[in-house]
Image 1: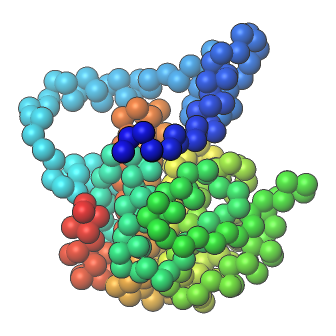
Image 2 (image 1 turned 90 degrees about the vertical axis):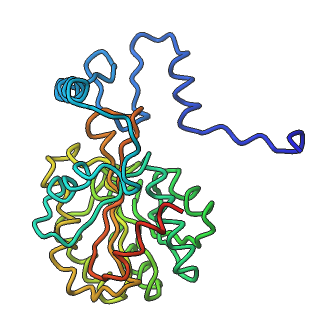
Length: 279
């Protein structure tokens, strides 16, 4: 059997990183990964992370299993970090950003198999792979005009108007990957109106909160949608999701600390979503 398994194609980004590592040019600059680097090109361990690790070493008393939804104290801190003032949100810890998105994809595949996920063109290269692997249908909406170096907003809206009620809309909260071009606040309000009008379900990929402006400002789109959740008329099958990445914000790439944040307006969904996501 193993002789017939095809060799997987090389990851484009990691292939470029390998080329970068092999390059002897002393003036080379690594712009491949969205992580903080110092003047020498290194990814430093932040002082705050050092202090937190020391506290854990001194205070941690067990390596027993966590609750299946993840560390309770960690999960309870997520809404506040996103600037969410109400308590209508719950978080589920995941072992990585890719797995957070994959769990959302599996949830869609299992409970809304006729839905389509609308993904920006361009986007993070792995978005397509994640949803395709879960057998979720994908459509693209135009996001960037390389000639004008701007978002073709009218074209974007026209494309999304083809979506049907119950489809999912994948949005980058800030620092859009790979363009770095984000919606203005007025454009976010227009997107909210469209999502409301078409009964779409937003998914926020919140990979780079704090890298554009600051934590609260970068979470503005999530705050906006949360404040207007009553307009979305969310039912048990219409639920706002956010996958948030701590490892990038705190330069903790190798620790893979992520979570899924979901709006808990429906008691049925709140009861069954955690159990569903750890299948």
